[in-house]
Image (cartoon, rainbow, N blue to C red):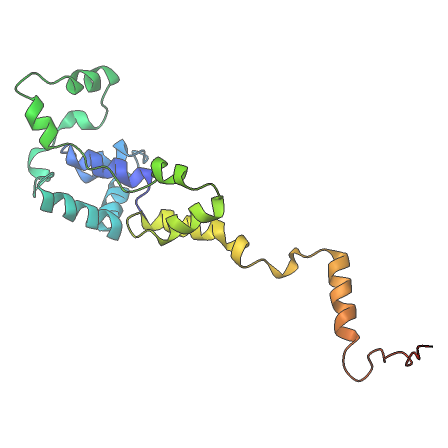
Length: 181
């Protein structure tokens, strides 16, 4: 399964230095179940892969639990806005640690296609997009390529059954030969 919004929020909180429990609360899990949810999320294969990737890129310290920040749990909007305006000496540091843009929907690619079926085909076959997005495109494309068996109407089914019955041993015979005068 791909990274959900909760998993992304959990990873973002871990990047800020929260513990597993605090990161789970920041991701929207209940206070009561946050400890178990944090433990479960760290063991999740998608989250673990993303954390390994971030550690390899140097965007996340190898030992997060060493310097836990207590304000990650409940960050007010005013403090978030204040953090967004770093001083002149903080500007190069924020550019280096900019969050990589996740692979996903590309508007420029969408505008290239006039037919939705062609767009879905290109999204499904594009290896650069997220796997969940590719699967969703394949699901949406399925009715175009393989229609369901029961999608034909009653009259169509009756005609198909009549055509099927008209063949074989008990089918209708040819009419008499017509002589032309």
